[in-house]
Image (cartoon, rainbow, N blue to C red; front, side, top):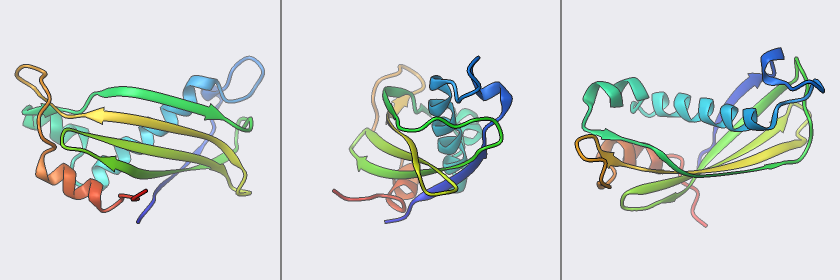
Length: 138
């Protein structure tokens, strides 16, 4: 099992009026990690958009928050693939501070659909193979 890790720094624009990470931006950090991960496995969104044969929309998102972070804090977003189905996959994200303390968790479920009619399709081979490199079996 491999974990894909993305280090981020909390910016002013990521925080709310109280000066802590705005709740929705935890999901933004997860999605940014997902986009970088897709690049890593040679299935970047630019590639998908150029190919125009399929899309990978989100169909489910959940998040839990454990600890506030503020401007300038560095966090690691550790992403693992926890499920690979015929047409969909699940990604789990653990957000941790540089001190190792858990900041939060996210889960996203994605499905592959044909660009032409937006109906589910089997995961493209290149995507499945990339996901399998980071798959964590239960």
